[in-house]
Image 1 (tube, chains in turn orange, blue):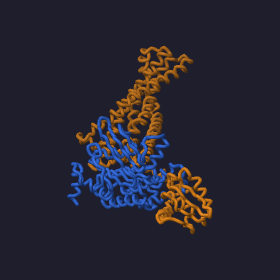
Image 2 (tube, chains in turn yellow, brown; image 1 turned 60 degrees about the horizontal axis):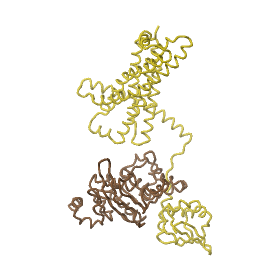
Image 3 (tube, chains in turn orange, blue; image 1 turned 45 degrees about the vertical axis):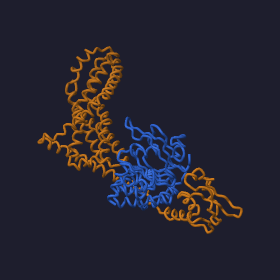
Image 4 (cartoon, helix red, strand yellow; image 1 turned 30 degrees about the horizontal axis):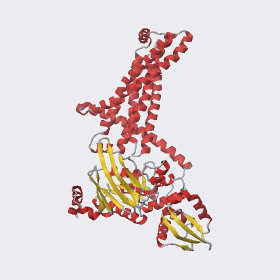
Length: 368
Length: 250
């Protein structure tokens, strides 16, 4: 019988029998704990029938004895040695993490504030370093990381086209559909082209795309840098004397800054296409009319604004992604926290900057 | 099947795509044994270990652990079987989001039967067992040196009082001093706890210090599994070259 158990002798003693191991004890733990708690420690303990005792069993007994040897004990030397070892070592108090209190809240607030300023400094430093790299490259054309730029361009630009098109098209359809319903009440269906053209080219195209790219490419950049830190690839590059910023960061930032305007063009075009198709179906507006009136009602400045915003957003997303990517320490928690921070910060920044730009250029590109 | 056989492999075949890694491996590991698995780089030692743990499913053949087929039974039965062995992975594989204490406590907490105080006492004991100080309990894995994280990983592998301990390159990357003390630690634990130990190694000094039996993996199968002295006398090109290095040095 392997089952661990306590048996009461007729003469008032106790016999412990069976395998007192973690595995055998686990199913009977509640019962054994109860029994150990009720048995008076002065009883006569016979541990002669224990077949196996591991450190968990020894610890359970020792705690049952309230960390003292019982006076009446019959035990083999072997078992005594096991219990002695556990008794000596399991009592060591492990340091506890500091409890959370008022002081803790203050400390956390301070840490957040300080780390915000430190991050701001880091961010500006990163931006400055990339400018220095650009100046360095101006005089040394052979050092341009063209392959890296092209590879990044393909990843963040070309590969993002299908999903950008899908999102753009559907948003165009929905926007057109909703606007058309309202405009028909006033008999002002022709204004649909104004709304779609201005809304998509100036605002929706760049912002929508920026959110998409922040989630898609920003997170990928951050995670890539983080994993390269974990696998010591960043250290290997530095050890070869290869500039991290020149070969990893600058290509990412340049590629995204260059690719975003093109993606904006593509997304806005597909969104307008969606709006056009929807207008044709719902209002019977002909494609020819749409094409003809679009350049008349939407000043071309809006296109430049859209493209410019795309470039700015691309720059921001890539900078934020690189910034948080470099902050990742080699553990999973840090990887997760910084990737999240990268995406959230990029999206927030894009919306903030977009609002600032909208106010600053409110007089430019509006139809008369 | 004899219950004294802790691990039994029968005609194990393992392949990745078109690449045949193991072709008909037969191996028996008896209780209370220390078996070293040796073989050249890329000979499939770690793959074989991962088959024993059940991380790979064999293309053909069977793995028996404690007399039962490894994959037999439902989720809970498999879980019980898996709790009977502990694994020390090559890089330690400590959970990087947990500190040392929580790493060791994790398998104990997963039993969902122990009280927190008991868990703390056991963690303190395991830390002492692998010769670490209580102050180390709050360190994060990223703050540990190679030797220390190996010890913590060993403490975690021993947390559930396993009957079988599997070590993947336990001394790789440690300096000779630390490697010797780690080997001494494993020997002491083997003696005290009576655990069956299977280790993968290509470090000759670890092998000489630890192994009771040596299983040689060459040509995609186990070519011999006998005691160390007998292994050294065998006439096989891999064994010759493996130990030649040592005999020249020694």
